[in-house]
Image (tube, rainbow, N blue to C red):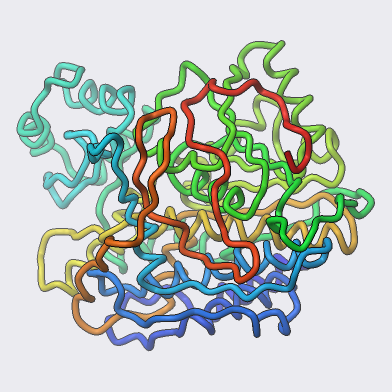
Length: 486
């Protein structure tokens, strides 16, 4: 099975946070991903990964991970198009370009949005450090309530610091988790390796592609040589922040019709303006029977179902992978989790920054910079790496579906990406300054304002990656599919 081959890949290079670890080249990392997914080695001749580490101010091989995962995703998409009548294409991903894309650098009407709530971030407390994620108001207010502080946006950060002085890091993490909040105690690599979830994660592949049902091979409408490789592919996206939206945006860049489903009662952050490029944006409240029924209708006409909710959340609403495979035989289900699909933390909420803290990455980065306080990676490397791997997994599973039929389930976790990143080796010293953004952005109208954002980092030789639809707020479009290829 693919999952077994990928499990072997995951175990080849265990998590190693030593600064002396030997660097893996981006080409070798991409080759390992490609072959583990069961794709033909000959196609790798058309993948060009340019530039070298370091490409960011980090001791981790961030560009290597992002180049390998995005390169594999773009090449798999290009090969799907070639199998459907499109041209055989060369794919190029430059180290500096892929780092730029992963910075979330964008402006709206000349304004650079603030993507972090003032309460979010690292705090010293009794017995260590904790990281709080408070970008959603209900998460912020839950933390404030737990600390006995007034809820709302006016509570100062200094009050949070004072309240946390009476907590141990692990006790606060546990209490927050019991309330469904998003908090992580900062651990060293050794502390994480002693955790039961680290052991569970080590037994899981970086990218799992599993057949979950029977179905005949799919038939797609042939495309012309000038058509984007994923033209006509329908991707139903139910994601939040940030890896899932990046995956959908990546597939949209290669021509897929991506329908992002949100709900009016769910909060969003301003990064939505950047990550919604190329997508249709509709609203459905799955708590209402008639709107849940509408999602069932959309699933029946979908090729890919991409979701980034906490494990078990959509299953409880009738949209788990097995139910989807029965509803739409031949579908490719793509799932993101924070800490993996099994283990005591399998259902725990988490975001990139929290996973960095919990799994030892922040302490290892601090050591490389000669600092005692935890140091975050300079960008959301786990989110973007996971997003590109989700897009790659979707394309790889579609290859398998076309060849042998079946319904498929693709799984990636943020913690698994962190483990993989650590296994790629360390950059000597503290890395390099940021690449410049001049000439790397594009400007477009959007439903959020005039958007200036970084161009997509993958270059396809015959059909350049681009987003044909402007970024629009949730609810702009009806929950309906356009005609294929329209």
